[in-house]
Length: 113
Image (cartoon, rainbow, N blue to C red):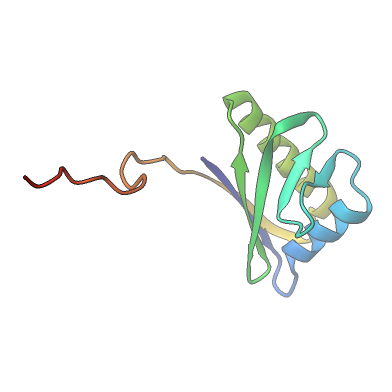
């Protein structure tokens, strides 16, 4: 999984900036749900970007099946943020999270007797 963290300059709210820009001005990015937590691109129907927020910092998880779709969505999100908010941002970080095999549901125990 790929996580993009968008860090604003002190005193700014990157989450609010992103929500306002996508809602009112974006042409290719749009909100896939009413809560404005899933950001999608009009050229990809299967994937989306899960938007979270922590004290004004945007935490975006790229959710797509194919590696090309993950790359495409990450590229579009980062590109849009640089184009729209370059002077308002302190940084953008990318984190690669490996999915581990354990913890997927509960295992059934073998029956007794």
